[in-house]
Image (tube, rainbow over all chains, first blue to last red; front, side):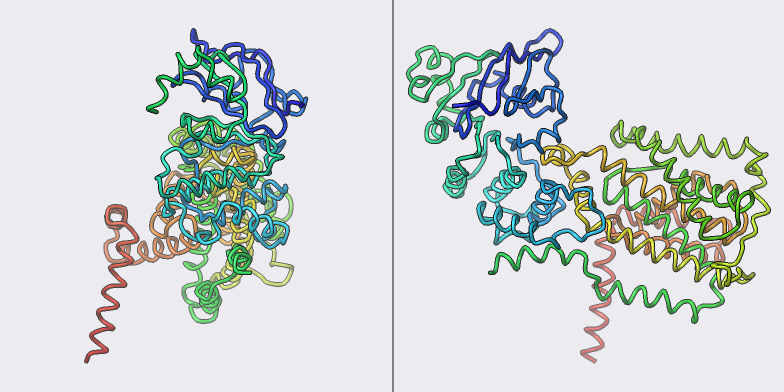
Length: 250
Length: 329
């Protein structure tokens, strides 16, 4: 299987601290891949390097074989590398409908169009309907984003990324903080994401990791500690020692 | 399909509401009905346009500016100098004012976008102060502290001559204001305008859904500067004079004040604020010529502390009670 997203000896240093240490990693096409690691393992730094928010000290990142190490974050999004956030990053002053309208318009390259009223093109509205239905947001499209139930906000968080038509989707703790009652809907939606979207899941919740992922990468102290199938990782005594044993409560 | 219906309501953002239509009809009615007040109404139209231009960056893109009058002044001087040295056709003069302000806006946008709010306040303030001093020192070109004299405008479209009572000037200002308002209104409900709201609400996420944040901010800053420049040009043309006051700090502050009074992020706030500001100024300066700024200040503090929403609710509450009593009686 060919890799869609790859890093090659990726290093990020903050002063004397090495947050990402020579990580060589590959995400395969259509992957359901989890990235785990104890707190402070450098997962967030790694994501920020992938999305271009941080510049690596050395090493390379490629998407579909193209070097994107020096590509701007927003351009990476347009190339199909999109992330969600652990803490909701929504547009508080807009309705979900408007937010999806922005995302879809932008994705279709209409973002700088100032002459047309938003949502007058059927290609835009059709795509909004599709995303809103997939993420079960149809009934709350015109509510204030801040008034949505937390589970719905979480769905919107992922829907906004999905509206960018990602080829690679980085899900950062998608279920974090979602109350039990709303959890099933969220997990079901995540499980039903299309197969052609390659997904990297950054997660603490081992139940979710084991139910969702086919492959797992473990990051410890910025270094790629272990990499393998779910079975391999869960039986790896070293991983159990550094992570799984202490991670069970988190 | 119900979901389609819900989504199709997105484009109703662009629809003109009844209150808006009534407002503009009332504005049009002021031409025949308030002929004695055309001079002050011209002033209101101009500062309202200026406040609307500030709302585009403050209310929609979240850029706070203490120096927006840099563009107002640039437009005024450009239009004045253009009339003296090139041609005194008013419409071409507006284009000159807009172009000068747009160039200045584009150039300074890169300074403004560097920092966060406080940096932006200081940079915008600084740019306006520098321009003010340049206008003061370059007396040979700008007339310095005496102002730019000798601006004589040709009739608009070769037909409508500016008159002493400001009738033509008012109609001219109102029409230009309306046209630019319609443009601004379209901008804010377009995909471009909505992307600005996204940037204002959450620049981090805006970037993460592929919005080129800095490009968009530069664009709206330039557009806003151009509109402010037209407002300045209108003042130069209708007054047939450019005072160095067009670059004074109080103009930037007044525009912010109008937005505080009227509210940001819906375009009409600038107009409501401009009308309220000017009317208050007229009333208070007649009532207490020396202390009117004191009362403006006091009202401003009250608005900020109590909150526009609550004042609005209070007024509506009193209104409802009056109506209720009327109904009971």
